[in-house]
Length: 195
Image (cartoon, rainbow, N blue to C red; front, top):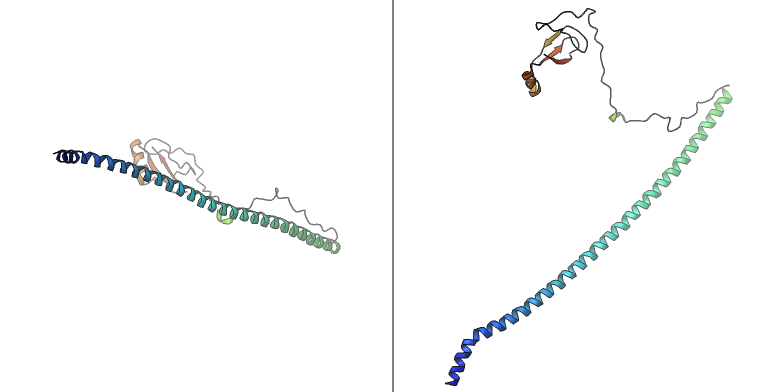
């Protein structure tokens, strides 16, 4: 009877015992996993920072080498330009002396300084001023008026040979709301707007 009661109590207590033991094991396992994940994360961060610092160090060394090579090249170019300038000035002086000996009173003009030289602009980037043609209008007083009673002449060349032209685009159709029409001069082909 005692054993039966003990077995019944054990069977009744068994789920709580199993649950408490499993809970303890799960908590231990959770704590162990969290600690391992923290270690893995810290290791990954240190390894990645080490790799990045190594890469940055090699790139910085390469950039320093390139900059020192560029400065060395610039120094060489400056020195070679000085030597070339001296040689050219010696050749020009010798030519001037020989010509001065052959032709009395001969002397070359001095070379202008860099500030005095005109600035050079590549032909591709030069902006040409638009060529303007002068149109001569008749020498008459502007006394004629159009059908609206206003003086009708071109504002560019003052010619009275103007005509109304067709509207093109949204802008000119928008000007219709304000009773402004496009006109074109037949002499200089200038387009203008008026009431």
